[in-house]
Length: 112
Length: 111
Image (cartoon, rainbow over all chains, first blue to last red; front, side):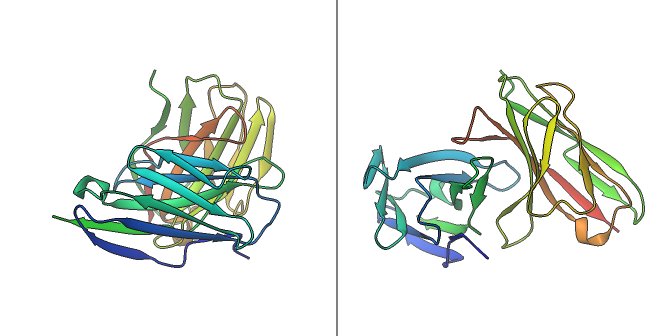
């Protein structure tokens, strides 16, 4: 049973446009969410997070939005750059707080 | 700081062989994890540890063992390798339940 779902395996965007990556979750007890970015042959790296007490968190070109009633969050990248091409994972701490639960990831391709 | 270091980066094993994937971190993190990533499947938790001497199973522990004798090291042991264990393995560490730091991964092929 997937608790964190990324239903779009891939997304293609032109350079300069907005990229929107989506994530849904099933456990209403989740109170913190993270986005990770992964390049080929590298480990995932932390990108941005959001606590459930907020509905938006911004860091430069990256903004994460949280809609608790819909159990949905999204990562916006504006403007998208070719270097943003990577796999993006949505994650949440398990209810026991012992580890992160990851979605399957979305591969973003930004063309110039 | 090196962060989280995994060795080896690549390995080919024959069915039935055993090996240990090494992981060490220099951030004094109490929490350490092993994940595996299969194509299109995200990262699945194999084992985790909340401190030296304490380990527990994750989502997919079968065929693996771990130990945590020091804060820094968290080796993953594969006994009797099977083709289903072909995957990319990531070790990670964290202070608690927030941001985790990952190693560069070990790509394992079992033939």
